[in-house]
Image (cartoon, rainbow, N blue to C red; front, side, top):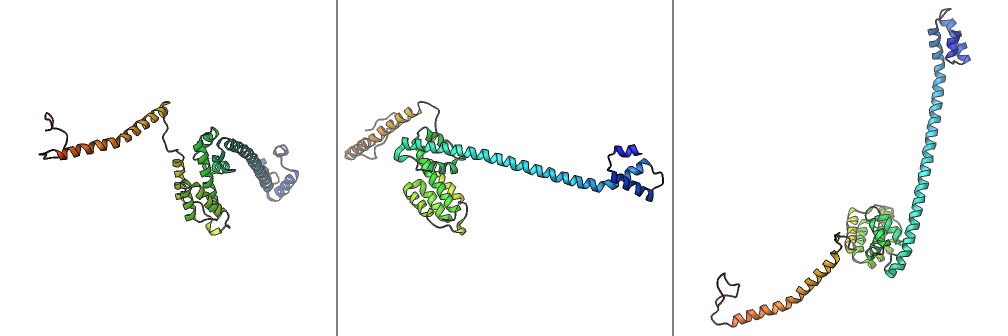
Length: 274
C-alpha cells in the first residue's frame, strides 16, 4: 500500500492526514482503493488551487502575447503609414514641378488619399505619370476631405456640408473659400455627425468634371478615329447654313410658279414633277 500511495505522488501531509482519518472512519486494515479515494478527496482542494493558479498564469501569458502582437502590428502599420506619407510628399514635389500653378496644393495629396484610397485609387498612378485630370481630381477631393472633417468636428451642419459638396464640382475657388470659412469656426458638439449620404453622391460629380466617366477603348487608333469623326461632324455643321439657303431658294421659286397646287415634295415613283 505504501508503494501504491507513494507512486501517486501525494504530499506527505496528505498521507499523514489520510492515515489519521482512516483510523477514525475506516477499518484497521483499509483497502488500497479506500485509501486512494481518501487521499484524492483530501488533496482535491489543493489541486483546485493549483489549477486556478495555472489558469491565471496561462491567461496572463496569453494577454502578454496579445499585447506583443498588437504592438508589433501597430509598429508595422506605423512604418507603412510613414513610408506612404514620404511617398505622397515626394509625389507632391514632383507634381509642383510638372503642373506649376495647376498642381495640388501642399497637403492636398495626403487629404485626397485619405478620402479616396478605397474608391478612386488609380488617380495616384495617373498623377505620378503626369495626367492633368489627376491633378484636378486631387485638388477637388482634398476639398471634399476637408469638408468631411469639418462636419465630423462639428464646424458645419448637414445642409452646409451638402451645399459645399455640390459646389466643389461646379466652382473650385468658391468651394475653397467656403471650406476655409468653415475651418475657421469653433466646433459645436451638436454638429458632430458623419456626412449625409447625399454628400457622397455629390462627390461622384467630381469624376465627371475630371473626365473619369468617359469610357476608355483598347483600340490604339481610337483617338485618331475620334479626331476624324469630329472633323467630319464639324464640316457637316458648316454646311447647315448652305443647305438652309438652298431650301429657301427652292421654296421661293416654287411660290413664283403659276398653277401650283401643292407644296413641293419628293416625286412619286415613275413620275416626274411638272
